[in-house]
Amino acid sequence: MSLGDGGGPRRLVPDRGTRGPASDRGSLSKLQLRNVSVKYAGTSGRTTLALSDVNLGLDPGDFVVALGASGCGKTTLLSCIAGFMQPSAGEIILDGKPVIGPGAERGVVFQKHALMPWLNVVENVEFGLRMRGMPRAQRRAAAIDKLKLIGLERFATYPIYQLSGGMQQRVGLARALASDPEVMLMDEPLGALDALTREQIQELILYLWQATRKMFFFITHSVEEALFLATDLIVMTPSPGRIAQRYKLDFSRQFVECRDARKVKADPQFIALREEVLQFIHSAPSQSEQVAA
Image (cartoon, rainbow, N blue to C red; front, side, top):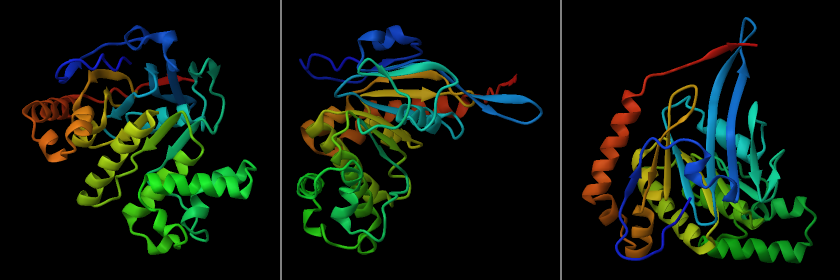
């Protein structure tokens, strides 16, 4: 997905209804999803089509947000990219190699922080590096570096239970970043936070995106959150999940430039697009499909 040339005032450019790999540069993209479909086993010898013919391409610096009603296949799509499950059809390619399982080049942040309560903050952050056999001094230095990046270095030796929910989620971010992944996969990571903390972590995520220039793939149910974070927004249909709308957005870069989230979210274009996307999601009928096994 092109990031633009950076010249002149950059505003939202909706790209509605574009389908297929050609719209995402196909084989030129660093991460490619090609005609990805997923079927789940059902009852009476039939299967349910959860995802249907999804094509998507990501490059460094892309922040792709998947938005849609519950059951549209967002988490299934992320699970396929993470390598937790294999598509029933199609393929996922990263750096020219097929994704066939989990890997350190893909960091995952879950809705529940999934931290280990018997480990302190820095031990949680370095846990993945420890499992990969990295020497203690090296992994500790990497973990402290990531804690500095999220502003929690002074809490390095604190037990997890002494941290607030927002701080715990920030530790989860640091843990995902510790392995220096190419892709950050985030499955509704802010859904359990209060409204104020949620906005603070949104701003932190954009800071991390700007600082690292990694590829981000983010799932949310919040239209406002999606518009604020995304450089590229995909709106998915109810089951089976298909990409129904695509938008090229610039609100995240506006925030990076002005550091004023209220100003960005009060932009008339932001408000108008929020209402348009909400209307589209609420009006999209369910198209649940079952097929013979």
